[in-house]
Amino acid sequence: MSPRAPLAIAFGLGTAGALQSALLLAGAPRPLLSLSFLALPAAAIAAHRRLGPCLGPRAPLGALPRGDRLARAVAIAFGAAALLAAAIVVKRALESPDGGWDAWMIWNLRARALLRAQPIGAAFPAALPQTHPDYPLLVPALVASGWSATGGAAFVPIVLSAAFPCLTVALLVTAVGRRRGPALGLAAGLCLLGTPMFVWSATDQGTDLPLATFALAAAILLSEPGAAEAGAGLALSGALLSMAAWTKNEGLLYLLAFFVPLALWDARRPGSGRGGAALRFLFGAAPLLALLAYFKWRLAPPSDLAQPNRLAQLFARLVEPRRIGLLALLIPRRLAYFQAWGLWLLAAVAAALAFVRGRPRRPELGRLGQSLVLVFGGFSLVYLATPYDLVWHLQTSVDRLLLQCWPLALLFLFSALSPAVEPPGGSESKLAREALLR
Amino acid sequence: MPPPMPRSPSARALAAASMALAAVGFLRMAKVDLGPVAAGARIDPRYAGLARRLPANGPIGYLTDERFSAPIESVRFNQALYALSPRLLSLGDDRAPNVIADLVDPAELGRLCRDHGLEPVATWDDGRTALLRPRAAAR
Image (cartoon, rainbow over all chains, first blue to last red; front, side):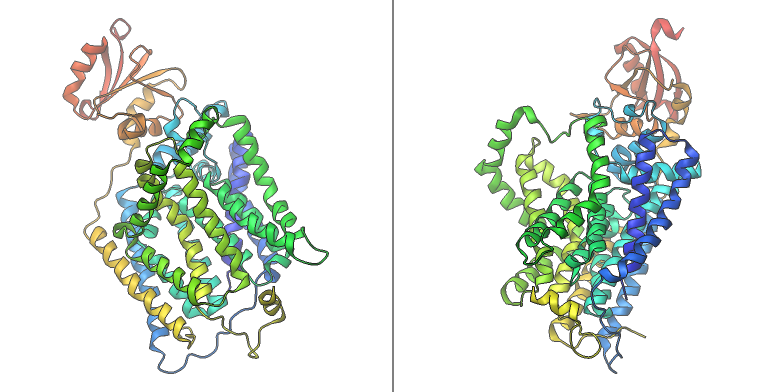
């Protein structure tokens, strides 16, 4: 069980979307847009070849002890959950063929505009701020290119919307399975499939699950034992997080949240390679960050959340006790929001507290935990600073933000709460031992 | 063959808890999603006639009887933007050479035309969508 294949596919999908964004912004001819889908397998194959040394030691498959009913039950439950989730996705896709509100108001609207607008700047009208013309373009570019290749087939955004959650489940199952054994990998996947919000979002044709996929893929690479030593893995992580930033504005927060702990660790470590890890990460992220900067600078109108001429008001909102108190009440209230989350969020908080109190710390997971804390901190600041009504803004967006983090939280919890499976020979590999000593 | 299960108590507890919580999640999904498939209507057909009649560029006015306090709250306005993309629709503009009426109640069309000095050029969807022009221009 290895996350190598889903990691490579995620990288290929992101590379194709990035290339297609650039082609659409440059006004490239339609045949070239269709041909650009070849970038998907090409990038995936190239990444697959480089990923081998970036992954830590594999847990042994071993033999199933006779009578281990729990392992059998987990496997059966995962299979049943996958079938049920697939049935729900098909039903919802038939019932809402145009996806959720955000799909037709923002993402697929932009995909159409990218294909039809002349000149391309008309695809980002400042006069329609509710359509968020400043949002990044990776998913709209994939949809637009799919439409261009198929003559506007309705299935393109539906298939794409379902592909990312499939990839997310595959990434989580294989990454946890490699570290903690296949049964726990399937249990982690069961957690995703059993989360109503996750399954329902698979048909909304939005971008929260694509962002979650790229962030999870990068998190897997960065939390592998010895990840900080693997140059290709660091560059791929940077590239994957830049794909997250080119998917949604929040993606930039994820990129920073993963970069800061890495850079701090890198600056403090002994030896001659100091600073190299952060540089490799940035090297991978640079191309798409350059495209993002060009888009924000030359084409996109200012974000509805950014009001630079009202800095004093922004700072006043950030330190207003009433807003801080309101946020401190509303977020825990949302954790118990049964409708979209079942009991998952409460259970995750309880598990995280158990980890904080009683578990031995694993250095390779420390940075992932710090990244999650930074992401939550960043979201809290955005809510405090929002020019909109805080309650309305939180109620209409917090579930989607939590959904982006959910696979990362599961990777962290399953890696932290369960014991590592020792590789053959009963002792840890040199790479893993070195990672634990750091 | 089912996968091997680590023997440690914490791993087994984690796996058992995952199954229990997944059962809760699927019960919730079943409550919402059980039932026959009600195939949803697509957005585009409602505006297909309009799309054929409207110019690719130039100002297009948009009038509706849907009640909302900000454009972000209007389902119809935002769905019209999607279906007619990349045309820019100007909410409340009755002075544009082409004006769209997008109505919840088709009986409102007459009142809308009177109030804004417009005449219908063509209607679709039982009068719920209409292309309007200033009275003089429509003749």
